[in-house]
Image 1 (cartoon, helix red, strand yellow):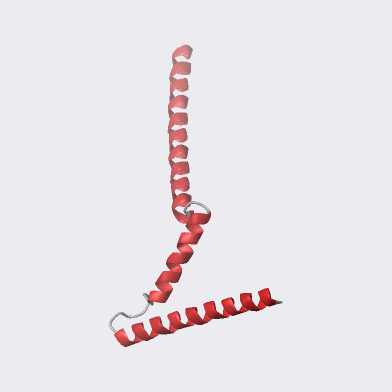
Image 2 (tube, helix red, strand yellow; image 1 turned 90 degrees about the horizontal axis):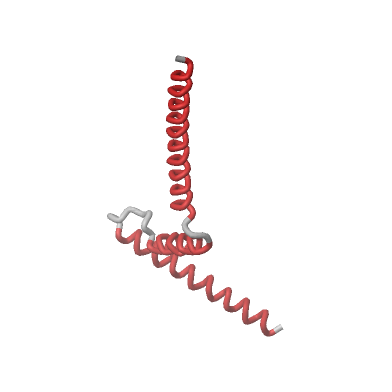
Length: 99
């Protein structure tokens, strides 16, 4: 009788251990999938997100689309600001190269 109880106890332990391992494996896979979706693939993910954010900023997509004048004025101002910034960077580089 004792031997039968030992065998059934071992089966229960093995079964609960397998369920525990399966639960931990599923949780680990969920965590890895979430990390992968949040981070992208290293530096390319960061660069892609940066360009995407810049594009959305220049498009003024966060503004109310019903007010077309505000949207176009914001777009024009942001693009003009980008052009001025690039011109200043170019001027600074040329100035430093002359010295």
